[in-house]
Amino acid sequence: MATDRTHRPATSTRSRGIPEATVARLPVYLRALTALSERSVPTVSSEELASAAGVNSAKLRKDFSYLGSYGTRGVGYDVEYLVYQISRELGLTQDWPVVIVGIGNLGAALANYGGFASRGFRVAALIDADPAMAGRPVAGIPVQHTDALEKIISDNGVSIGVIATPAGSAQQVCDRLVQAGVTSILNFAPTVLSVPEGVDVRKVDLSIELQILAFHEQRKAGEDILPEGVIPDDETEPPVAPPADTVTKRPDPGSDGDRPAVMPA
Amino acid sequence: MATDRTHRPATSTRSRGIPEATVARLPVYLRALTALSERSVPTVSSEELASAAGVNSAKLRKDFSYLGSYGTRGVGYDVEYLVYQISRELGLTQDWPVVIVGIGNLGAALANYGGFASRGFRVAALIDADPAMAGRPVAGIPVQHTDALEKIISDNGVSIGVIATPAGSAQQVCDRLVQAGVTSILNFAPTVLSVPEGVDVRKVDLSIELQILAFHEQRKAGEDILPEGVIPDDETEPPVAPPADTVTKRPDPGSDGDRPAVMPA
DNA sequence: ATGCCTTTGTGAACGCGTGCACAAAGATGA
DNA sequence: TCATCTTTGTGCACGCGTTCACAAAGGCAT
Image 1 (cartoon, helix red, strand yellow):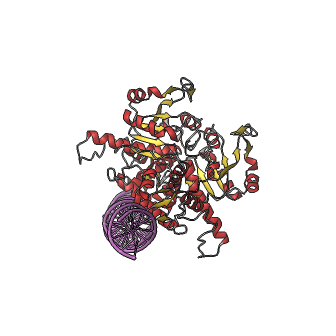
Image 2 (tube, each protein chain N blue to C red; image 1 turned 90 degrees about the vertical axis):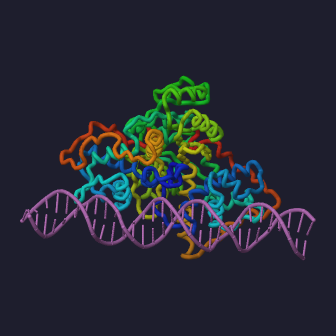
Image 3 (cartoon, rainbow over the protein chains, first blue to last red; image 1 turned 45 degrees about the vertical axis):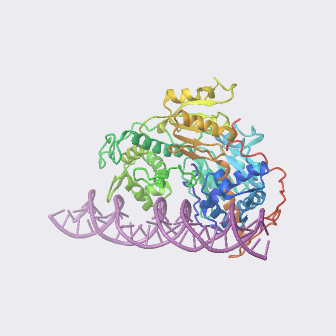
């Protein structure tokens, strides 16, 4: 999926003994547990919870073992207690003000997201470079101009920033965010961001996800046609020889890579 | 990033000898190469390209080695040729019709995404359960009602579906898509989808990404305060003892998990 | 033609993540 | 109190992914 394993913070250090892979699954467990909690289910076995979370029960038990021994043998896990423990471990018992930079289609959609507040995330501000957007309310929050970025970060003690700008301005926005004190960034722009040590970046990229699906899709289609074991080394003819000293300019690959996964405007 | 490594198709089989981790990076390389191509750069070294893609050069070379020997020692890789080879490997030389189900904020934003066409992805249809949406054009494409889902899939030969509905209807939509012939799904709804063998699902979940960032953020903050090596076993007091036979109902965890990462309506 | 220089392609080692399988622990009932 | 049954917690082995380090290969200048 998107954020993928294919998605890791630059720092792959094992924080407090908890493996990165486990951290990535904790929110999934938490969601399943919250659902059980709302149904007033008192306890769950690792088997049941694993099934709800779509993972192996042994993996789930090992994941929980990194947090501590919160289960009761012969019974299972206390739902409420586990919800609290995971929330605490993830840092969701405190308030996290976030800013969203780039209020286009996607930025606006993110601003309207209802799942923020319930998890301790609060949209502190919406920021856009377009002066025409300034003052206009989106999801009940007035959009502010990029000029005020540093002040907003500072005044609200923001440490998490969401970038939903076009790719062209993403690095610049990123630099300003980091300079202003942001140390965690969720990037929706289709660019590789370079950040100093100590800053975490997670990337969400629709285009990449679709391309990965296309790869597997193509493979499936190929298996239907080709007999087992045959390797189709070259389905179609190559356009030009590999060691071509003449530069063969492509017609126009279509202007891509300049906008985030979802067009901001 | 989001698309994680935490996010892998159910089938972790090594397709045609290409590791899953490599497949996930190919789109990144492709983007960097496309940028070079537009600047008419004829060749790149593994070092340069790796830097642009934000990876280790040895990793990049090994990744490319799974595709074949497309480089020239002492020189580097021919940009145009490599663009073609990666595109072909990813299946981007053909047309991929996709449908988007759930035209809320996020669905609409996705529909407006400009990066589809340039990569061979074409929005074949927009589908929503709300009758009031039917016929209304979004991004120049008229929204169709869910009733026509099966016919749309069939008529257009769609094999890739994007789910941007609330969590509550995601599984149902998924089942219908799969039943109609879709074998790859990009899921934006905050739910674990269960699909039959042979169907790939990738998940994009804003809430999870933020929670992972919060974890690392909390860890950073803790390091500043606590001395090295000290393990804070219990920063705050637990709300209730772990083996509580009395079911302690939580006040209200906030209704979450019923809407996708971005509110659809 | 020959030697030097650059860069690829890959063998090998290492570390992380996963899954198996079982011992330990607690509940439950007689 | 004791036996039994259920479920957790984890030691261990395996496989994938990453990285190092270097030999092989090709270009280029003399």
